[in-house]
View 1 (cartoon, rainbow, N blue to C red):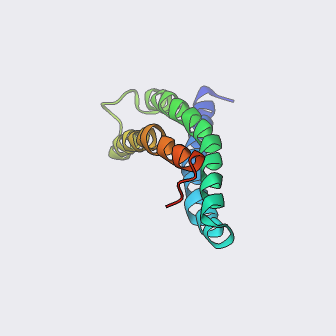
View 2: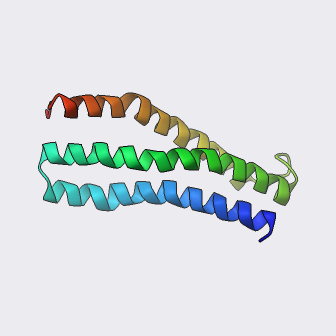
Length: 121
């Protein structure tokens, strides 16, 4: 396996885990949980899901820029010659990381506390 194909595979896998996990959680798990579970049980489920999923997201947060910069250097010889879609990907990465950190550091602790205190409203 060449260095490029290894970096590309890691990059693709990390993006797939992060974006695919969000798609699964929003489009499949959330509607199923709303249909099948009562509010308190559903909130407990989300705390557990986030706890497990965010470990994988942190892994993706680390792998994506490392593999992305490697791909950038191997394919385009640097940032200056990178096409617009690469710059858009870098911008989207920054936005997604900012949202993820906000959710994990501000909103998830509130959800955990509400579930622990059994504040369902």
